[in-house]
Amino acid sequence: MLRRSAGAEGRFRIVDGLDIYLRDEGQGPPLLLLHGFPFTHHSFRLVRAPLARRHRVLALDLPGFGDSDRPPAFAYDVVAYADLRMRHEMVARTTIDLIAGR
Image 1: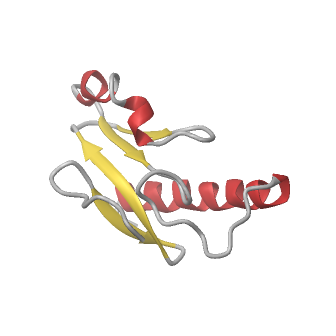
Image 2: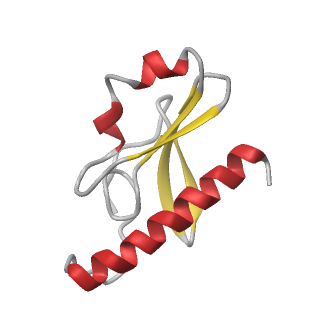
């Protein structure tokens, strides 16, 4: 898959066998930002820095979007999107576990 490197801006975490792009900035109570369909973590570019003054802000690209891996053989239709939404919930729970150190 062609994508830009995570570099200093973010990193990749493996979740459910997929590389998930994650930006992690700030300190304080964690705040997880989840983009909608069909957007990316970039949707939060204007609010991340102000929120990071008081929170640990995590913005990620959900599976199949932005710099995160696309699930194999994924068809973007209603049934596939419903399955993807379940994966998004798994990513969110895994991210919260990572924040909590579980």
